[in-house]
Length: 506
Image (cartoon, rainbow, N blue to C red; front, side):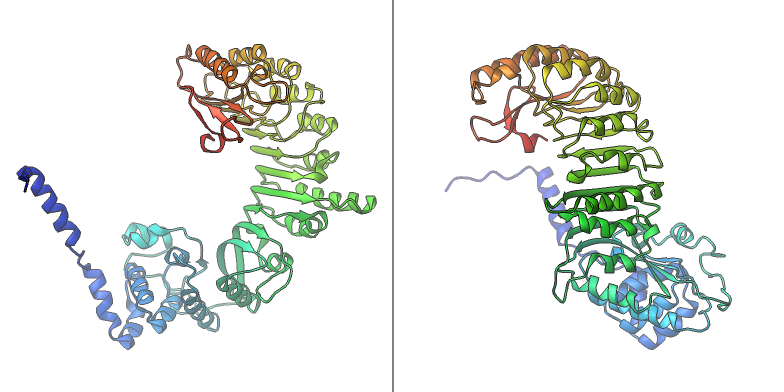
């Protein structure tokens, strides 16, 4: 049997220490022990809430919730000494029981004709935020959540209600699969619907993943939107296809989202059989709402086919400067691009994407003007798959060279020759902030039927990379081919000449 070498004592001690630490159980804190002791006598816990120091509420609430002391949790909700109860941070999973217990406590609170002496609760936050509130129980944290407290140990006495009761706010972020809402969402919506006069349901971020058709777990979008305080909405993302009629139905609700900062819609289908007058009316109904969105900074419209010839109706209604504009995989007319270049709301644009917008037969002048107007602010520019040709790119180069703040430039999917690509790299070399670049392999890398010539593409990309290595600034530069002769998908060559999948490199 071979002799085993004994490890050096230094390493042995380290291993033993690590093993000892892993085997140790973290002992409960004095605060946790006190909470556990108090909860053993539920009647005592309930009577102690009136005089309980405010910084003991969070740990005791967590302990009561964990051990399912239902009546204590309900009573603590009623006596909550902070303006906000960030319940969502404690609901790592879709915990319907926790929500039900808490809402039962709120029901008891709302039924009170006289305020509890120390009642301050104004907001129930169901988002997964404010984890620090539960992790830190210092006086500083308590003062943050209750800025009007006289001291850490004594809550301010609040007089009984006078006049109309102020509604309690519930704050949520919604991910809606409208055909199949989960039990928690259904319970919440039905609970709010029955208490509309005393509860405000506020959603900051909403993502919609499906349209409602039928079924006991399905809710129409207008029914959900009717429950929300729409002026609280800050971000809306629609991931599923909508018809133009559905967009027209959504329009009046959109107009009420006066604090909306980000809007993303995609796959807006237009029926071939739609009546032309109805088509114009639906487009006008939707686009007119943008005049009410004074806080809108990020606008993304993908596969929105109704924009063809109608982009001016959106842009002319914008009230505030945009920070990000993404119009992708849409069919646009030259008049649409002219309107975009003259839009009053783009002069502070930082991010622009026209990916998938075919520009092959479009005059480059509108895009020239657009780049000149945003040259001092533009940071990312995505012109992938726009079908841009040599003559168009040559016309754009002077304007592109003035985009001094540009950090990311994506130009894959355009048919450009070797000589014009070299001119492009010569111009972008002057952009000191540029750090990520994606270009197409030169046109000479492809055969007559569009097949990639492996030897040529390697040679051309290596030659272009050599011109880039003279730069001192560290940059990520990729050259793309489509299709890859090895896998048939999109791939890119990196600075080391290694071929990688486009999606992984991106």
